[in-house]
Length: 456
Image (cartoon, rainbow, N blue to C red):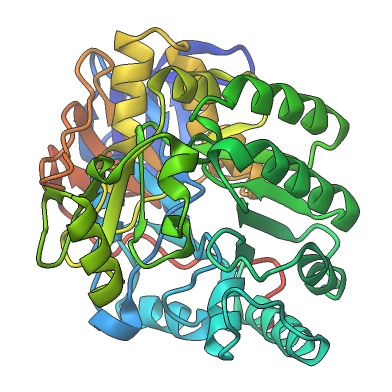
């Protein structure tokens, strides 16, 4: 008897780039048979009229605050409800919980809603040493940081992330010194760029150079929030040429015209509005005294001074440029950049993947459905060297998202994250039915996936 049998659906065959009608049988967490299947199963799912996709893989999100909030899941629950089965935290130079403790927390809770990977955040280590964000680190400090990075990799971190814009004092030489001291040749490195808008092209050139000189796998984080302010055509031309020369260089992007970060971050330093060609009224606050309000000059200055941890959403990007980043034929993955702070935040944490499929595929015809799924599953799995994920094949992990291509769409808004997506029938994680009809059934089917350097 099979554990799960999915009947009458269509799945993406990435060898032919066509959809195939077939039944799919699952046992012991794996896909064990594909075809016309008449056997019995503990759970049978009728997928008539549905797409049976590999579970979506979010290469860029922001994980739980276990240190602050205790042993509970928040953002991972939102990930699951939008069809994500595996995600990568620790992005933009920030790790909310030390790697050892993060791994231990998941084990103590007996699993997670989704499979979790995590990077070690360079800025978190740097800031924890008391280094001013506008000042370069000295040689001794860089040596200490590099050692901590290596300890985190041995503890299970998958790679290292940098937030160059958040700590402007981080120099090119500082980045290169740390990377060159890491012995792992194929180390995964991601970076939140140094500047956006009018500074985007210089920032992209810097990251291309880091990727080239380090020889590491290098991921440019959320390209749209860097370059969808009038620079996307030039950015993609430069990137496509660089990615053709260096396949280890790639990028991710998300499908919203606003970014989000702490209002006290360096992103909002003097001159930002002039650079963007926008005003205070383009900034929306998702927490604090002025929650769910747009700023005035007075509100912006007050909150930035008195409550710098308030999350601010900045409507600065152009939708047509976001579409170009998503549709770009090479090097592109979908990442939500999603994080949740006690129930509040940017809707990308709860709607990114359904939004790509509903708005950019079905409504706007930016790219075909199978190409979007390819970017959201196999491309990302291969990037992360998860060769048993991201595809529907016998022997692969049974991480599966079943959805209606005619109705799937995001629901979350900037006022309310808790409006669930529509059109997702079921999500299976490691062979276990984790969500059905927007109801979480099993919140512990996921596991911590350690990086390849972890010591036993």
